[in-house]
Image (cartoon, rainbow, N blue to C red; front, side, top):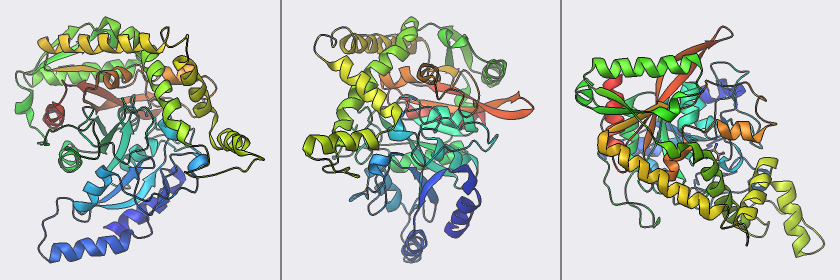
Length: 447
Ligand code: GLN
């Protein structure tokens, strides 16, 4: 099975989904086989998987799609990855991503762009585009990504697979390279609700190595149509504007399917959502500017030698970071600086609180909320690269969920035909904190 997956990875090489292959995969599979033959029960025995290149795996390169970490080899393994290994899974490779997970298209990687298998002229979404494509192109059946503002859900929608952003704290962040620590979560991609459940039961749970991880033992299962009967679903009114016809259709088809199965569907307003993108970027960029201060060429990765210490650090950062990362470090530093902190960062934190409160109010009326995952299907490569604000706007449906720390799942919901090509469309279900299980159950019910 592992050989087969490696073969598929090679055959799909033109998509550039993986940045490195695991040379030890076959040997590790043999070890798993021995354990199974010795009677060990392993939930994921021999399962090939890929993980995003910002998740550390001891002895392998972790580049985060950046030149600055081009030669960085992880000395340790992230908890989520370790749990996969302990359950018998075999990591066959590391997945491409936008540099330091900053982006919505997987075009900003130092390893070049990842292509969307549905139309290779289009992006797969991002930043976890490599993981999404690994699953969409059938290299593996499951993958791990990370989601700070939509980076699992949006590429899942644009490639036609499931993508789950768990409740903040349900999956350990230990060993996930930090982008914006108060928003980052590792999440799975899969083609079935059952695979999502299988994976979440392995990777979720408390970790003493991550102080923000929660005591909430995972109890995931793929549901049946029974899970939809009596379910109260609230469509978020603010997400109904500005969608393409195919996205509107997919949302309507989902609503119809829910009603047929006995769910009740209503509408709910979250007025503060109009500030979500502004608040998100004013929180994510400051956190990033602080987290990325560690890449100065002294401890991690590449160093460009200058005539003194300061020049070495400056040259390393100038040449190591790409444009988008530099832009964010500058904006983030500005928003945190004396005199601007109150006007920007502190105001964004207040908006974050208000958004969380409005979600809580909506959940007094509804069990889950529903929106499109993205207002449009996959866009063309290069279409948004020269306009950062257009790229940020791609996250309009996803960032608020990270601000509020909630779980949300993108579910494949249909197709939109653009220029004669079928492009996948996804819808997003949002649940109250710690009710991630409900999302996977209802996904099973809709299958
Ligand atoms: N596109 C968003 C950003 O660039 C979200 C990225 C992510 O979730 N990692 O910040």
